[in-house]
Image (cartoon, rainbow, N blue to C red; front, side, top):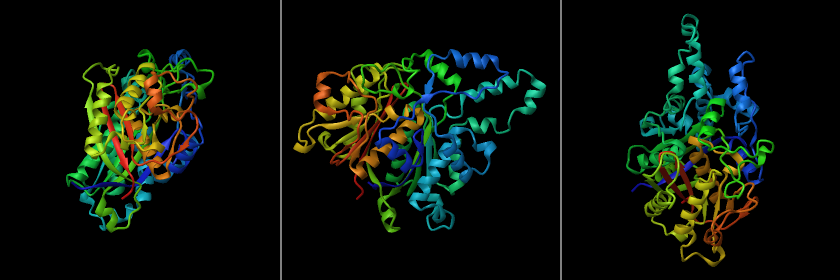
Length: 442
């Protein structure tokens, strides 16, 4: 089986635009969660009333000035590309491709473009608010039809982020997009790695993107009672995975993209290698539309599948970046599953008596379809730098005793640790689960 390595990474997150900015802010323990301010038309009294009535008034948005500068450098057709999810994906992809050093090679034929592809997914895609606005336009058919953008449909299609990236970087190989709710980014990376493993491509640009911080999305998730509402006056404290005061997730936005390469292809051109993808596991809860199976069976099955694929023992995993979104049930179910499969594993070295488990959503909120890709990059950076990012706002852990005994939740402060292999978990509505395993650069 062909081996797959990561030769480039790009991030657009609420902590900053770029890998260096996001990673350093995360390790410093910063929170990107803020009070929401929606740019609504003053004449739109219904919209203004909705914003004032939303139960959740906090979110995590990408820094506007940084993002504006990054977009200016990469967008070629703003009318087609400027919806947040497409533009964020293109910015993250541009950084990943630049770091990997493949852009010019793809355009001058030194890398065969038919052997290079793209796999970038999203959970929701273009803003549902945009769909609502287009519908409102057509309430005045004569004027509205003329005002409706010809790019309306292309902006809505979730695979168009991948399409724009393909065009920008001359990626003529597999052109793919995963839509698996909050596991979309992780599934995209995992699927792309298999395209390389099975010989369909030598290079893949892969990841996830999402930009859905708007009144309609907030209202929808609020009706599900999924969002935090207790910390509207102290937004930086709202996202608190594993903590007893957690009351729901905080919606965030962003994108994470990596360049994957077949190992010998990367070595031949002297490419930098961040990590190797050694394991990819998938499972389904077959239980409920939005809630995880309470026995953690889905999470345990995908973790075990990733370990089998990586040919590693549970005790070989030293850090897990948790999906944990700061919901009462979800955090507990995942922590118990990780503790039962990995935390309780025998054979761990004495200086690594407990595996580390942290959720970086405490700092950036939940990026929905982008979360898995962003967190996968954090798990790779942890391995590279031998440091575990903290779980922000973890004051009073609310988990069973056996979880606390077998896992270190890395509360509030980053930890330098000896890491041999890392894992990232991503779970989505509909009971879809995935785990990725990363090993040191060969």
